[in-house]
Length: 123
Image (cartoon, rainbow, N blue to C red; front, side, top):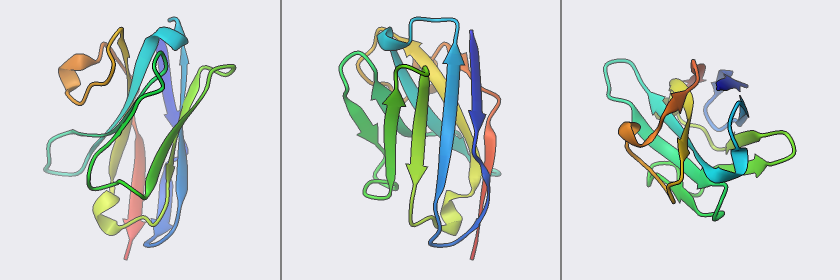
């Protein structure tokens, strides 16, 4: 199993970034893909997740209306489009995969993790 995040960077407040989560080694359509983030000194938290099997999406209240998760089944890749970014969005963003669940917001729900990509939002 391989999960690789990309697309992080430095952006000014109000800007946008699109993160990619490229996966391989499992049946993509049967998995839920989650995006988590961890800011310095804080616990890792769920940002969004997408059930490839059911098409159901979850967004944390802090990102609703600003972040959108989408999936390209042909590329086994999930995207996190982040708009109207705020300094509070600064964190390492991780992608994770979980088999056979509708949605999961806990780290323990996920079996496979990527290495993370840094997002820094300047004020």
